[in-house]
Image (cartoon, rainbow, N blue to C red; front, side):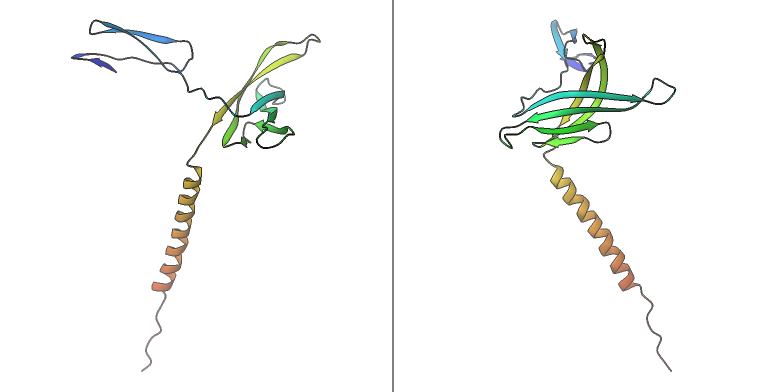
Length: 160
């Protein structure tokens, strides 16, 4: 919802780098867009090979993976090789790389398909705090289990 004074207008934004929405409200024209944040990394990630396997008898993808090389002079003079697949992300330098999709971008000179790999890159600075919280919950459950067994155990009967 965009408001200016007493005027208001509902606006739908699509996640795209190039699309903007033009809104005329309160005698002014606004161009509104949504674009994910771009961040320059301190290291280089190079796609070496992208693979996709399909389920037998169908054209549905069964798995997708990207073989990558990371060049990070701050860590090593040698390149770091890794594989990023759908359920196995790769972490480096505080960033986690997830396989998002593979598309065929064309064909090379031998007629083989050339694939473009889409990766999602995330950074979670609070991950240690989340793990510490999960450990505290686990310890609390264990403590409550022990305390329940201690406080509610049957008491011996008095002999008469």
